[in-house]
Image 1 (cartoon, rainbow, N blue to C red):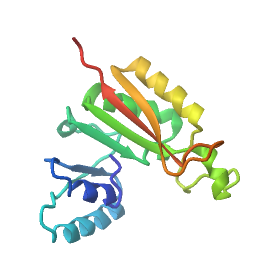
Image 2: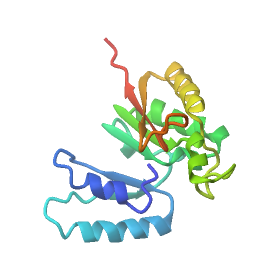
Image 3: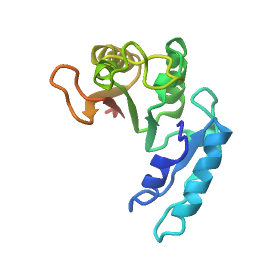
Image 4: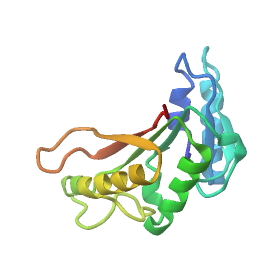
Length: 175
C-alpha cells in the first residue's frame, strides 16, 4: 500500500519465494516511475513483475482480501492522524492480512538531522516518538485480533533510538 515509485516492489520481485506482488499507489506520477522501474528490472532473469493497481488505504478493493503480507513502508505519516484509524480499520477488519508491516520515522531522531521542529518530508502529517508509536500500537492490538512487535531500522543513537521504527502486526490465530 503506497508503493510509490516501486523501489520496494522491485526488490520484492527478486525474492525467490514471492508468488504475487500487488503494488497499490494513488499517485499517477509515482505509478509512471514504478512502471519504468519494473520494465528495467524485468530485463533480469527471475524477476516477478508486480501488478500495479491504482488505490489507497481508504478505498476498498476486494482483490486485497486475505493476503499474506501488507506493507506500508513510510506511508502512515502521510495520512492525517484523525483519518489513520479509518485506514487501519479497512486493513485489519476487511482485508485481514496474515501480517501487516508498517515503517514510520522516529521523530526523536530528527534532531540528529538538524531539522529542529520540521518533519522529514513536506507531506508528512505527523511523525511519532517511540512512546507515541508504542501507545498507538497498543491501541491497535486492543481493537483488532493482531499481536505486534516493534523494532528499529538504522543506526541507533543511545538517547534517540533509530531513524526508522518498524511494527510487525501478526493476525492472531483462533484456536
